[in-house]
Amino acid sequence: MADSRIYFNTQPILSLNPITAGKQKIQHGSGNASFGDILSEVQKKVCFSHHAWNRLQERNINLSDTDLAKLDDTVDKLAQKGARESLVYMKDVALVVSVTNRTVITAMDGTRGNENIITNIDSAAIL
Figure 1 (cartoon, rainbow, N blue to C red):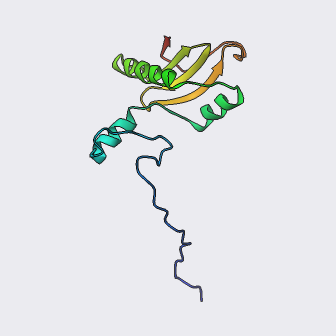
Figure 2 (figure 1 turned 90 degrees about the vertical axis):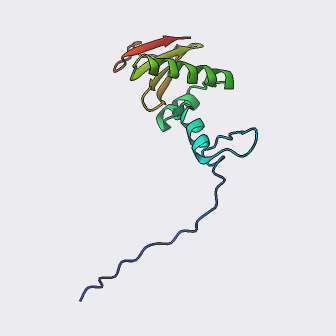
């Protein structure tokens, strides 16, 4: 007769600081920010897919905090215009961004485009 019990592997639960859990430290002036405030602030930031992160590292592409702030502002403007998938070109770096998800899908430097053809975008921003 088969055993009908269900067993779950147990894993220890590690406490995480909710502000630094996403590898981004968010500073709040008073320290009394609500969860909703923190969540909305984090959701405003553009994130990078695993694929895009790997491409940035492989191609030695470094984006400064200023570049990331410009990218956030550009994605905000693209969203206001109704864009869904956009090419953002800045500092000889091309980023394909899902505006609706606020996620960089892939990245390439200006010298890497095989045939310089980028598909599945509905808008572009040149910074």
